[in-house]
Each structure stands twice: as structure tokens, then as C-alpha cells.
Length: 343
Image (cartoon, rainbow, N blue to C red; front, side, top):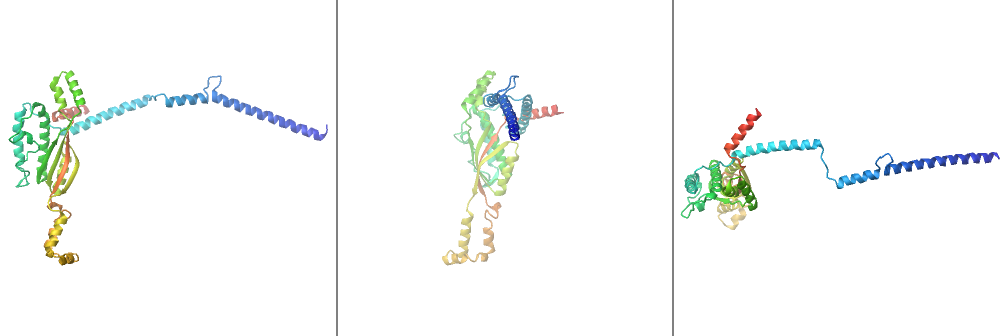
């Protein structure tokens, strides 16, 4: 064998060894891949099985919270319930007080007449009164010549509505309202099915048919549509008074407009009077705004833009009064009990 043949033989042997080593490595890698994909004989789970299990867990199985998350949820529920109780106690301080035990249709109508007569005498801008002599504060059907006596089942609702209206009218007087033009009681149509369900529960609890009727006639809120005339500064006092009141009030659908002559009409009237009403004077007045008399300037500046104190506005709004199911005695007892437990 020549030297060159020996070199070729050594080179071919080296290449063969390298090919065998490479083949071994490829086989080992393939075997490891199959073991990872399908698992091995020792029970190790493969990638395919693990992927299938994960897909099944995320797509089909319902998640199960851990014990720590359950404890956190229970703690949050307790904190939330305590917060709800404190907020309800605070809001319920303004709930309508319970009616007197001797309240009936005749007594209610007599008290209604006395209170309406009293409120009609409040000072205001209608011949020195806050309203006309015929204004009955939304209770027209129970007063006057054709006034009817309320039925027993209506008394709870009517009593709460009238106590609320009395509170609002007193606030109007304190805030300087000039005139009350409209108080409309909006009847709340409670869901019949829910009312019957609560009434049935009361009946099962032994409170009978009277309890069922009472449940159907005790909504949690009362709505009123109001219209009144007030100056701008007093209007702000009304809103602040409603916000500060212990009674839980919500104001919505609020709108207002200038009462009486508009500012544009007033300017046109004053300028027309200053120019004598002829066209040449009207053309001339455009360039001589500074030549108006001081008296005319003061009258123009008394408009709603520069001096709202002198211009009444007509306010329309919807007022909702909420009750939270606890009268003042119950609230104070609950507050005292909570304070005692805290100590």
C-alpha cells in the first residue's frame, strides 16, 4: 500500500467515525424528543399529554379558588357589609318619622288643612305671600270643597309625602323663594310581582293581609315635580339646603329660565326710548354707546348677566326623597349599640 493510499484510508476512517458519532447524537436527540413528547416508561408525563391536560383545564374545567383567595373574599364581604350598614345608618337619619298611632283619614285631613293654611302665609312675592290662596301644595284632591277623605291604605304614603313637602317648603322659606307655582306628587308604580312576593312573605311570617297591603304601598322613594320663582342667590341656597338636609334628597331634571322681560327685550326697549324710535336715531345709536345717560346704563346693568340678584328666575326640577327603612329611633338605637360594642 502506497503512502497516498494510507492517507486516504486514514481520512476515510476518520470520516466514518465522525459519521457514526453524528448518527448517534441524532438518534439520542430524536429519542429524547420522543420521550419529552410522549413521556417515558418511568411515568413522566409527555408534552402532548401535558398540553392536552392544560387545554382541558382552561377550556372545560371550572377554576377552583385557593383557600387564601376564599379567605380574602370572606374578609371583603365582611368589610363591605359593615360599610353598607354604616352608610345605611347615616343615610337613614333623615328618614320620614313614623306616623302617630291615632292617625286616620279624618285626622290626616284636619292636620293637612292646618299645615297648608300655615304654609300659605309664608312671606313671598305673591301679594306678600309665598303662593296664592288657592295653592294646596299638591294635595288638591284632599282639600277644598270636593276634597275627599284618604283611605286607610293610603295614609302611610300620604303622610310620608306631606312630611317631605313640608320640609321642602320650610327650606324654600328659609332660602328666600319668592313664589311656589307647582308641587306635583309623582306616584311610584311599584312592581306588582315584587310587592306580592314581599306581601306573601309577611303573610307567612304571621302579619296577615294588612302586612301584605302595607308592603305594596311603601315605596323606598317619593318623586316630586317642583316649579318655583327665586333669585339667583336664593336658588343656590335652595340647592345647598337640599344637599345639607338630613333627608336624603336627589335633584334631577333641573332647568331654569329668566322670569319676566328678557335681557335682549330690555336693551331694545331702553335703546328705543333713548333714540326716540326713528330709524336715523337707531342708526346713529350704534356708534354712540358711550353717550347713553347714566340712568340708562344702570337700568341695562340690572339685567340677569351683570346683576342676577335683581332678576327672578323660574326653576323647574324633579326632587326624589329616599327612605332606607329605619326611623330615627331605630337609627339612634343602632348607633348607640355600635358605639357601645366599639368601646
